[in-house]
Length: 239
Image (cartoon, one colour):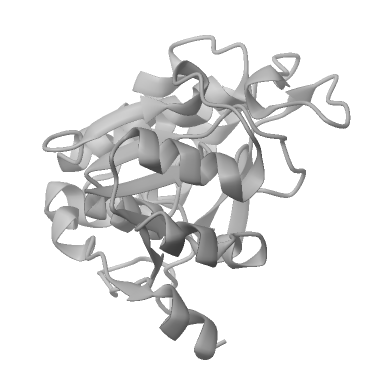
């Protein structure tokens, strides 16, 4: 049983969808501290004028807030601005309307906190590519599992009877790999495929929102979501 645990990410890149596709259980992790500069409330898109950011403005952000406590700022008409930017950037994309409809399906709701909005954006992408089938989706704030940092992650994995924990590269900074080994949980890191697909506006880059994959390839984009992983000892030895 492969468990993936991740903070909600705003219309995330294809690498996040690779991780979800590899999971038997995907756990959203919104009850952890929000970090400025993360991809919880922003993501890159590719335009004819280069890389641009889609950023959700936040309201009264203060140090120590959890992701699911951070409120969204609605003073500006940022949803309209995002849709206009996307419509312009992907004017020549064959599945532009699919992509815009997907974004509108998320934006038609007034989400109070950034965790809720970002989770909704992730799930919209999952549904579009059929990743909502054959795996469970849970949220850490509904599991009632305590502790912090590496130990809490391990507690969550064990509570779900997972035998493999698959994670992104940032976890190498804090994960206590030996404690997972003692609990008979194998830790693997993503080996992101970054598979090229037809893309507008110059040289291919994988580091943009998966909305780019929707706009350019449509439902067959699932063929470009190819999860690979590497055992933690091999991952760390290559760093």
